[in-house]
Image 1 (tube, rainbow, N blue to C red):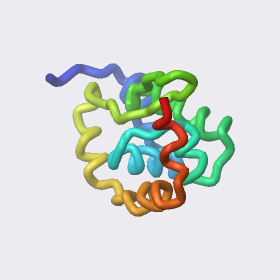
Image 2: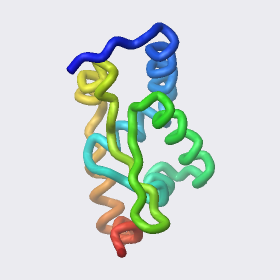
Image 3: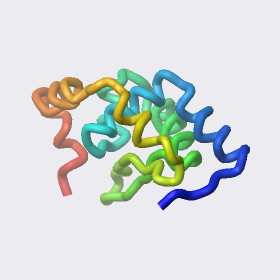
Length: 113
């Protein structure tokens, strides 16, 4: 399903993808859904900084969130942007960074219920 975007919405989506940190977050989410604490660990950024970036991606409807207790889990969205999947497909594979998080035992922090 293709949705029509206005100029302002299209500009907001592109602006959200115009930051290297946010592109890296999208590349990580391409591999699997992650919570803020996992993104903090992988990116070496503060929790408020990660949350601010994720808020911009969410406002542009490029990611969506779901809550699991106190955790906020993010996943890719972007279905309203016709070329979003193509952009995501061309992002680098950062699965090694997620594997390193799992190996260090820090991936399980948000998986506890």
